[in-house]
Every structure is written in C-alpha cells, then in structure tokens.
Amino acid sequence: MSRFRTLARRCLPAVALLLLAAPAAANTLNQNVSWTIDRAGTTAKYRVVAYGDSIYAGYNGSISNAARWAAPTVDSEYLSARWNADVESIRRAKSGAVARDVYENKIVAERSWMQAASTRVVTFEMCGNDGLQARTAFKDQSGTCNYAGLEAAVNNCRTYVAASMDYVNANAHPNTRLKVISNLYYPGYNADNVQSRCRDASTGQTVNLRDRFLPALVRMNYWMCEYARQKGFACADSFAEYMGADFDANGDGQVDADALRYVSGESEASYVGRITGALRPTLRDANTKFVTSTSSFDYIQSDDTHPTFTGGTVSAGLWGGSTGSGAPRYASFTNGKSPIWASFGHERMGWALSVYGPAAP
Image 1: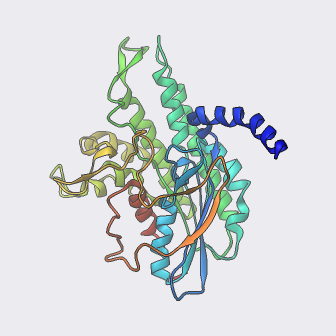
Image 2: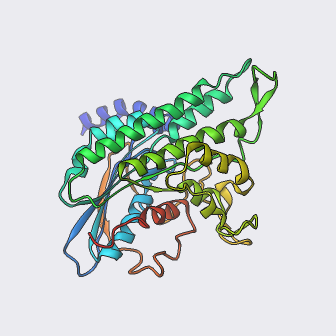
Image 3: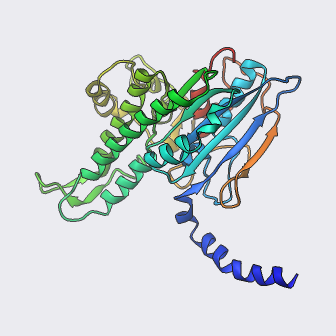
C-alpha cells in the first residue's frame, strides 16, 4: 500500500497538469469508441467504421469521455432498423487532428478496422482543424494580411481527402456496401462577422473575417463532394443540413437547406458562386437552426465549434477508449427519421449519413 501511495503522489502532479491543460490536451486526443446497437431477436452483426477528428469523436469538452450518440452511431441505429440486425459502430477518431493526421494515423494506421468481413459502411470526415487553425492564425495577424495560410488549408484538405478515398477504396473489405464522407459546417459563422486586425495589401483596409473564411470553407466542401463523386463515395452535405433553414425563407421555391446542397457534377466556380453569392443571404449560424419559420434548435455546443448531442457519454480519451452495447433508442423510424432527427447537431449529421445506407447489408 505504501508503494501505491508513493506512486500516486508522483503521478498526481502530472495528472493535475493534464487536467489544467484540458483544452490543449484535447487538441491531440485519441477518442476511440465501439458501441453496438443490440437489437432484440437478431443474431447477425455488421460493422460501420468511422474515421475522423473531434466531430466523429463526439467531443464535448472532456478529456475522458465523448458523446455516446455521435453521428456515426446515430447512423448505425438507422441501419440497424433498416437491416433488422445488430450494428457495431466503430469510431476511430482524434480530436484536434488535421487532415493529414486523420489520413496517416487513423485511416492508414488503423486500416484493420475496415478490413473486417463484417464491415458494411466506411465513413470519414476531416479538414475542420485545417480550417480552424488557419482561421486562428489569420485572426492573429497584424500589418499586411497574408492569405497563404487559408490557401494552404484548402490544398491540404484536397490532398488528404483524395488520398483517404483512394486508400479506403484499396483497403476496405470487399463486403463494404457504402463509403461516405461528411463535409464541413461553418462553426462561428456569426462570431466571424468582424473586421481583421491586418490590412489588405491592395486596398489598405481591414477585411471582414467571414468574407475571407467562407469561400475557403466552401472550396473545401466542393472538393469533398466532387472527389466523392469521382471516387465512388457518397457525400453527406452537413453544410447544407446545418447552415440552411428547413423551409423556403427567401421565396425562391426551394427549401433553403436543399438549395445549398452540392449538385453532382457542377463546377467549383458554380458551387462557390451559389453559396457565396445568390444563396448567401439564406445562410444562418448553426446555433440557431430553423426547422420551421418559428421553431429552431441549437446545433452547436457552447464552445461554438462542436455539434450538440443527447443520450449521455461514454469513456473515450485520456483513460482509453470504450466498448459497449445497448438497445436501440427507437425500434423503427417513420419516413426514415427519428423523432429527434432535427433537434441536435449529431442527430442531424447521423441522419444525413443514413440516407445513403443500402437497403440490405
């Protein structure tokens, strides 16, 4: 017992330092979870494998736990009902990881998860941290504005999204029925509507941060969906789901969220022009996602970055990942949607992934 107390005293300062530095620790925090939707009366079990950063991790500000019902597990619940089978949701995620990190240290290094014969769906998301880091660096600039960091983030995103799709295509088990990527929503859309400290070299004036960041993010999203089209993936358009209302707010005859979606085969110029031009007045901060003209939900947590969720947490992070199982929350889905499909950010993203799910495993 005395040896244990001595070891504990030696460890406490390090643990305390980690806890005090939680935001920094979360920047490179593995948050891996395996959760099985255990449906009564079934014996077959299939696997959904999800690779990504803090979004798929279900990050909630904690270094020791994450959302149980993050988007990939929500998707698994839908598939479980559709297939009348147990579905194992494997989330191999690293909070704070840039696209290269997700590619190298999750998709490539942990390829064995998608090589299992039970795998039916492989999904990934990335690039959010490339954008967030470029945004932070730009906000810190003074003097003459340098836009190279934003351009580098776009190019890195393109490089590693394409590489990731190629690697999944080459390494996922042949039984895989669906490969799907989720693109980026814009966290902090309202908060970025301010002027920079730096000044544009041509005009000598400060620039609106949102005016600079939005086109870069939209270009990332275009290439996620365009590469998906080229390489046999589906593209769940989380930008449209989060940033547009579920009704026709501008009277153009289209539901705003539908109008914002990537159109298969369109050019980059067309897509970027639509989102940053004619449809820009329909964009809304996802903290206030309007599902009707009088009803809205908050899709973003208080950190103004990560999606909201419900259903509690599971161990994931500093103390290791977790494996567990439980009954589905809903036995069936009317019109393919749960009663809370539009109420939380992770529920909405999980539903967006589920619409591409095959009818049978």
